[in-house]
Image (tube, rainbow, N blue to C red; front, side, top):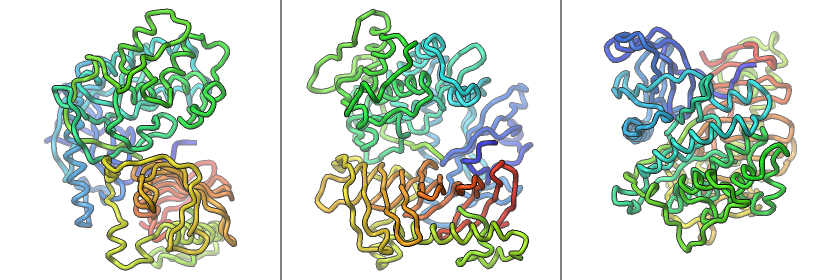
Amino acid sequence: MTDHSTPREGLLAIGTTLANGKYRIEKYLASGGFGNTYMAIDTAFDERVAIKELFIKGVCGRMDNATDISISLTENQRTFNAQREKFRKEARRLRKLENKHIVRVHDLFDENGTTYYVMDFIEGESLSTRLKRTHQPMTEAEVLPILGQVLDALETVHNEGIWHLDLKPANIMVDDKDNVQLIDFGASKQLRNADGNSLSTSSALACTPGYAPSEQMEQNIEKFGPWTDLYALGATLYHLLTLQQPPSPSDIDEDATEALKLPAAVSKKTADLIKWLMKPNRKMRPQCVADVKQFLAETPTKPQPKPQSKPQPSKSATKTADDDGDTILKGGKSTKTSTQANTRNTTSTTEHKGKSNKTVIIGSILALVIVGAFGYGMWHDRSEAQDASVAVDSDSVAAEVVQKSVTNLMVSVNAGPKNMRNYAYTGSIADTIGALPQGFGTAKFEKYGSIPAATYSGHFTNGLCNDQTGNATLKFDNGDTYKGTFNNGYYEQGTYTLKDGSYFTGTFKEGNPYKGKWYNSDGSFSEEIGK
């Protein structure tokens, strides 16, 4: 079955030309929360290139067969403008990175009401795609040559004072000769100036659970450094060699031996390297790429971290530059018979009785769990709702706010239905009395009446689910799952999968599927709503 986690709405049509005919769209490659990527032909040289388009899910729209994007709300326009500048800086940042293992940017231009940049088209596949294709872990002999190339790429990145901040198998491209290129610098951030001095910043970043160390999970930007990417490198090695999801920093801290079990075929030296890279305490990890290269060149029985009172990046990791940052990116059947049915989608129910029943179930769950539990602004006056709301930009969490990590903290709110007023929270929270969840975390809601228990995993702002990565999840104990974006507690755009395997992918309105497509459990198309 094909991947359906990312809706393919709002894409440019195949054959569309850009930059006065210089580029012609040939194929869709991928989508994230902040952009679409296409394979195109450079018509002047008859060469394939990759083109990334700024297209923010939930903010930008595009009618069928249209090229220009549309942005309806003023606040969405402000969000788009801010992300547009970051998008341009991302392109410029990549442009200046001179390394054969880093994708190179060739062009940057505005068109169709948005911005594009053109980069090398990479022949090959990501390491995550390779693992899905082979259904087996890689051997140490396969991994080590890739490791060396990734280290070379990271060294170049860190020498410019840039942290990648989303290193993982999906962002490592490999061709049929195992030549590596590091991609997707949408989350990268420059936090030092040319003299190596730290720059202040008020923006926070999304992260990928399992690959993000504690300082990144806690959005503690002042503690970011080369060691942050090196943790992700260790997690990547772990996944490549085991096919297992990397453990959380807390699990490693509790029992590293149990959490970081590796196949018996993996050498002690490589196992020690992974354990060193994935130390929960950033000061106990390698402080720069040079430390890792030195370890690989030597044959110690166990890496010995250098004690220090404060992380001091080596010369190879201290040059840095600006304070902009980007975040990466990523129901029930049709509402035609839902108790909250959209009247614009009303049709006969006789031929889709099963779908209609599922719609009722989904509609009730979505409406009560999402709108009721997290719809904070609906239960307060306008001024309070404004205080609780955030922009779509996931960089909205202030980094200068002192945060801490909590486990199973009981959170109570004076809003929403009784089943959702209290929940257990694990994750980041401001270190102040009475603070609400802030940053990345999980919330566990108990069963209440006919509404099943559920667990949310994603970002919070002031106690509300606000996540534009496209990877936030809400898993119900009855087997239903939603994955996608949240905006002030609402499902926004994503995929709702029923326990029978059928799924809806598209946009949601007031807790109900609004515009998108239904698919059967085998991946075959079922119906489209909201045309």
